[in-house]
Image (cartoon, rainbow, N blue to C red):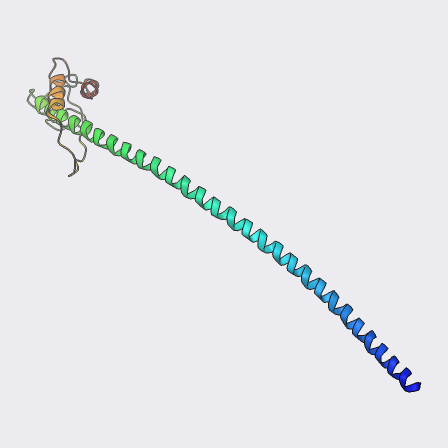
Length: 171
């Protein structure tokens, strides 16, 4: 009976140790599963953030396309305005050349009230409307030049205000 009892006690002790190790293993597995659940939650949040970032990127691209189209239209309009302004400047330069040429033939007096200004050079009308002419500028339409010349040639038209009025009429 003693050997049987000793063997039973030994089996009981080993079973107790096995139960203790199983309990610790179970605790560690629970912690590992909890970490696994947290990892799964972290991955889901990362996927959601990635989807939102992709949607925001697509929205940003669509917005940039719209803004790019608007900017392109504004650049096109600005170029048209530059061309129109170049025509106006060229017409003004041509008109100023004609007015200046017509005034230089008047016996030493300018067309500004009959008194030459202190800064006037011989042959100038007392105002400067010249602009740098660019190499790529389009030539003036002859009808606008003729209209500007006709306005400038009206009798009694010699002041800068009259010249500006003539330029406005040409437009």
